[in-house]
Image 1 (cartoon, rainbow, N blue to C red):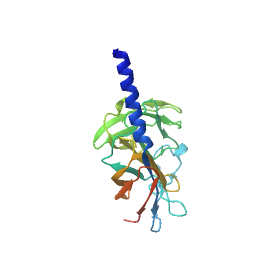
Image 2: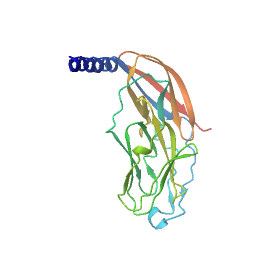
Image 3: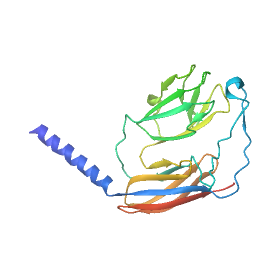
Length: 232
């Protein structure tokens, strides 16, 4: 009798979760840079110039021809419960050409994080949450890969530097919910399966700061949102 009751309980729970997700809306939108693009000096390379080059492009602002701003992180403040985290989902942070790719990464706590090098140079990726070290790993050879999943114990914004290449910089957003997105090359984003209701949607850029909007999500269909950043 007990196994049957347990099975019924599991089926009910799964059905309830699916119902919530099915009757949810989607946020779609874009983020634009509305001023003249900032004049960014190239990043000076101070080590391993034989491989990395003398300079690298400054990727703080990546703006396409129509003003779309890449690498803006959108997320819901005080989010509801969402889909359970997928512990098999893999997120990769590459050391590629003496820079981090992607420069901005976002994932849900409980997913996997692996750090990999495409470079034939020693990299020592060092992740910080505030002043606290989250991981500090050595990637001495090309195609070296380290699984940092077990090091991720808290949510928040993690800054990633390299202890052997001072100019390398990346940011990893770790969320405790699935309601976030990162803008693509056109500045476009989408956040799906969000239960109907009123929310505060935030937009974060590494130099532009944080902007907020109040939104209302319908039970089905899309709500369209736009954010604008400019010179500070």
